Image (cartoon, rainbow, N blue to C red):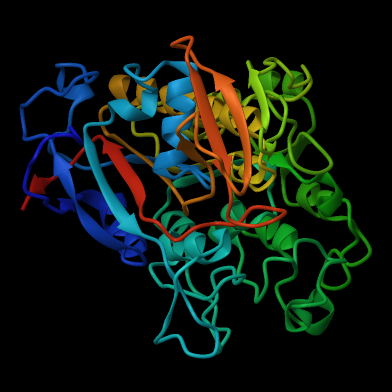
Length: 446
């Protein structure tokens, strides 16, 4: 329980994925954890072995990333959706701690860059090494490719999945299955910053090309326009990335209905929007004093042909836990799945609290899917975290902000004033530490 005054102890993970995550999380600096002791129940945690930490090996890992989801964003979403005394699904995980997220400088990696972007933080957990902002699983300065946790899992025979509400070529999903100098190199026609990586120059190609070539079993998200671009070299020269994916055994789908019908037997590439996926909620953006509101958010904005993050998570687990064509056979391989709620960050940038909260609530519903699966499959380790902190803050309703503000009516039927003030226009990331929480097999506490 986070509020208790306990000595902070590192978590020691066991098994293959324990080793992989130990490698990956070395890229962060842990500030310790306040943990429930073995056999001790925590509020919101089932009393069964499936619902609390225990020994054994993690056969499966589900890593859920709330992009831009700092403690402030979590608190704003909790207050609005559940009330101040309520709890989100992500609040129920019994193992909690914090880590710092700073990047390093491109020209001098011995010095920190205190405010990271998603490319640098994603590279850290994906590879176990820090890098400079903008890089996708490559080293600062030297541009050396770094092996990722997804690649390690594949080499060990595990199924892999990568899910996001952003373009699949955006930084967080990209760090698992691509290595490029700059995060902008998303499709074959977006390679201005990565000429050495062009397939026509003998390189591995853009992020979209590499994700397909990597053979990730389940790729679900958006960014169809990146995958419709034409490849300029290699065996699929002149074809689109989608055509390359189909040649390599992918079934390519584009609607929630097609996702619902998907069955195991071949790799799956779901592209549910040309750009980022549609938002769940909307509302008035923040504005200079006196701001906007008081308002309640407008829910149910996502079109029916796009799946929710929870639906993508559920289907990914269903597909990954089965060997192709053999159903839920005994002895099936384990899996590694990363799930990103991407637009918490994007709507925080846009100083829109309703849209930000809606994406955080949708992310929390995906967390609940993962936790429900873990309770029935105790060999599964669920990890929930963010990648960097962001802008939004709760301030007194009578405060006069120099930034932009909006007042919301929460589940408590009370007013909550949300402030955005890191920039005059588009808001920026911040350098605060981030929560990391887990539920599942833990070897010991030391």
